[in-house]
Length: 543
Image (tube, rainbow, N blue to C red; front, side):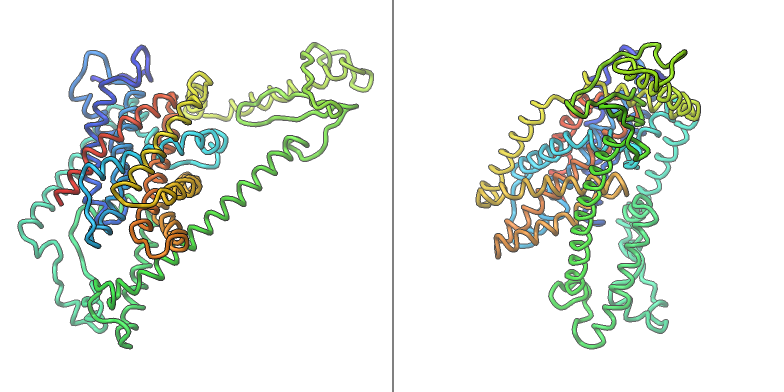
């Protein structure tokens, strides 16, 4: 009740109620991400959670006009944009780092800076949609975006499943609330001291180096969200660094027993090999992405010249190019001598009563086009017969979303990039005291690294904003040596922009599977950004 199974109907997906609900949910998610990010070192956009909460909210309100799946998609897009603002405003990395150095800025300065970087990332993502979400839909899954679309569809299709998901979310929230209150009231329970571990051979030194148990629901949730591969990688990395390398260095007297000492402790020493590993990985990903893009372009050109089979299909002075992509377009004929497309209509030639060798001129071309048309139709029918109902639904939704009338106008992108870049340069060269050329250099570098980050997010669901920031820091260590603020804030431009670009690309993926207009998604994303600032900035100031 209160929700409709129909995708949209007469209700505009970009309705006031969907946007306002998304902003309200986004304020909560962004505020939560501040505490979560400062503890875990990364943030969650909260797309799936935002979708579930919005559907549950309107199910409880039971409005006269039922809430639709596309409205839920808009609501989720707005909320996830707000949730990503913790990263965009630099509240996880650069702002705390500056504060540790004794440099503080007001909430208003952080808000203005966050808006500039977030909108920069959003408009970085706009021209990438066609390449990552449409052209590479089969290879880049964007797992979070796909999961969000499937969650919305399943909750609207099955009321019982929707109710179960909402109850699971509620029970987990209640459990986490109880644990948080109890550990706040009884601090020793937050980090229980298992004294018997220190008595075991070899464990005493590990306990002194910081090993132990922390009963923190945020960290348990982070482990569940990051997935098995990432979780195991983090566990192995910490175990090797602090369970093997640090004890050896301590025993040899190279470091002291205080793991949090940034000069002579394990954390300070492990920082540099950790940063080096992330930076090398990020550069390798950048190189690999460039190589893959080059290979894909050469493959596409070869397909254009020789067809799907890799063999030339020539006839007289004409060559046929076969298109066997997801849309199964009819083949066309290319004139080798004049470089034009022959637009001869497909007639009955070649269907009955003719043999190809007996035909010449336009009739022969007609014959070839008729044969190619039959082949394309057969491929399409075979593909459709092998698709299940969900795949057919996704195919129809993708066509609706890719309609040229829903394409984001180029002038939106141009003026958006121009305004966001200007605001970014003014903010960094003003309150943060950077030279004008420094943010002007950081912006194109951020655009390049955003491309890499978005591709990684599409393949692995992990947006490597941390390594991206390290690369920019290395660049600015060379071009602006000794300038700490410039080094940190230039990296923050890349991290914040890549975070927003990756978030919007996940939303674009979900929207395409739902059949939502990318124009409306862009507007929803832009509406969520100020809500995220409203939630993240004051929360950070209170902590």
